[in-house]
Length: 276
Image (cartoon, rainbow, N blue to C red; front, side, top):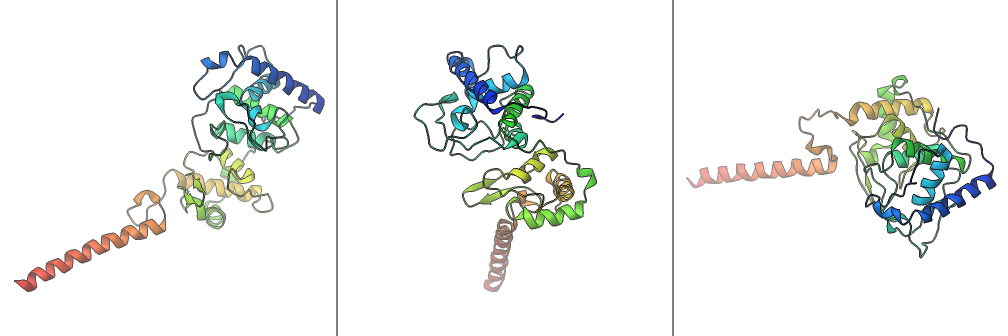
């Protein structure tokens, strides 16, 4: 069953649960010193809690200072600091569904040490059970998309290549090795799973645009994922030298440098023969 599915709670109940969990998390501030340096706050005993209760407490201790106790976000920095000494500021989560929460937690994009830094793939700080609980709680804050279930085997590599070149290669390169754009780093897709690729396409993390089903249908998404998975780990090198797959412009510069060195060598050799 998808995370967050089957959770039905009235908004007043969710608000009360979040408020109670926030109070509990503040009470956990003292033992939080024993937590990892990243500042993760955990309940003393997670075993006696339901999934939604655990998610609410983890959210209150690690997410509410940036996203608000009720998921409405924190548009302006607050003077008080949250878990890990982080100044709270973040977007609303009500209505993002399980899809966005699963992506950001599964990739280690969250939690951030600074709300202004670019999220990047990092060591995941929550256990699988904690991620499911957090995802379920975020999904309960409002109606939103569930975790997708792509089927790359049903897609076409050829169609996926065309879609990737049209929509993605400008930033991620044709072989999905990442790159650099103005104001952001573009990650390689070598470590991304099929579900993570599907989630990223739909939510558009950081500066990446989001693509609706009108832009890229689910069937086309299967093809795109199949292409990325086929070239991401072992990109082809038809020229014989990949040069780190850093893109056509740097590769062209390297080619000209090699050509210039060869040309200088030829000139020196000819000059030596003429003098003799």
